[in-house]
Image 1: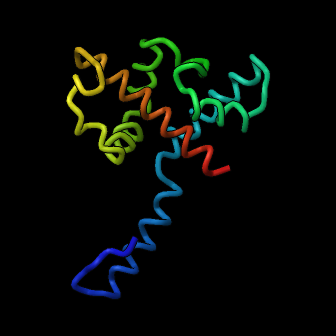
Image 2 (image 1 turned 90 degrees about the horizontal axis):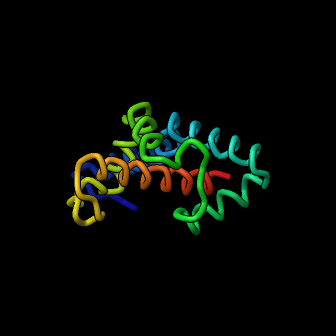
Length: 129
């Protein structure tokens, strides 16, 4: 998408910088999600590409080992909060009131946000392959 700017030539430079920065965003989060998916496949069988595809289609039905319980999700958030917060901010998640995502408290809102970030990370991984 072309950005209109006072300096027309500068807008092209900004576009190129943004495009190259996107491929390196959320690297720690993506690496850990990829690792957990591979661990899940190792223990349960299957293939990486089909697992990712199925997760993207049905994230509620497909579970990744280590990211099932609320406590696991909370620990995961604490460890990768910088990438998760950046991803959720980019997705405009924080613009939603807790009631809009069907949560009743801060902890629940954090868990739902972490689940959303994991879903988005898997989508990014599916597009990278």
